[in-house]
Image (cartoon, rainbow, N blue to C red):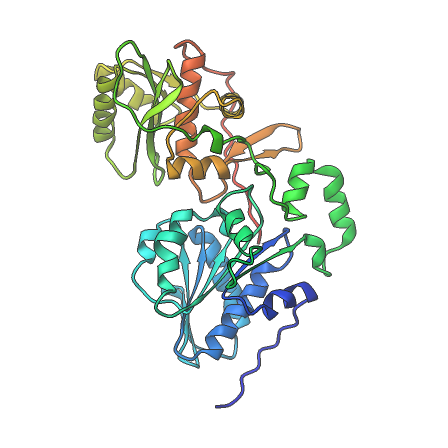
Length: 411
């Protein structure tokens, strides 16, 4: 067979990743180190060396997988036989294929044997996506996996990284590469970031350090995970925080016991008619004899009217940039001081770990989930906590226009 050569000049740190013989490689890097580029060529290399192989690039959400798809389309120029854009599939002249997937609906990733996986921004991927769906795809093929990400605290990605440092796992190897390991990044740019960013943000985003808590909003999350869901108790009172579903978001209801500050019930669903959502709320409120605090911004306002007409004791929370900041910072204090506990709810824990902030040029703080992710569980929990600590009083902050902030991500 004719030898195939692809032009690629990795920098020395990228070469360390390429030269590893480990079946499972975990790579923690600073921003702009070049992890996506390196792994683009790594997956192409595997597809060429193993004719007829099936290789997957898995990103947390659809938009990130598209970024990799475009980059790989360029990296594999000259060896692509078909570019099936509608399927996000590249077919190579060796008979191998590279497909691009998102992990947000990880149950759709089951059932097929994979020869190599690249899991992009692995710190943002659910534990269940790897353990329940992706890891089994490598079993019959004895396939390989590369995990690449900037750290996000000591979450599941940190556990994988630690495994690569443990001699008890000989098939695993892990690497840390700060942004400065990329020789094409101007050192003065890194120095400017060090001077102007909060220390923990710089250490996480540029030095690729695993901090005790992520350089995000919420701390002490793991210590708040306690107990189980509970049935209504005599002489206990309850509140429900409800984040109303909009478009593709999830509708989330969190029931909080005001006596012990413990989450006793949780409901999450999407693509359900508002009438049916109100019925689910009514059933939950009746069961726990609970008062409801719900998002009444925009579409939520007429829904609040319908909720009240259904005999539910409910009040609205108007979201503005100011009121959201107060709501989120209140929840942050409750978690840090361990004033609230909840059972292990994967969706809730995941959202709490990812939730982030941005400092605007005017010095204001904006809070949100990263672009493409959900914060419905966070908001529902925050509403329930607010309701408890404001003694059942509705809260409407100053009339400030809502501001939607989405992290632009790394491109």
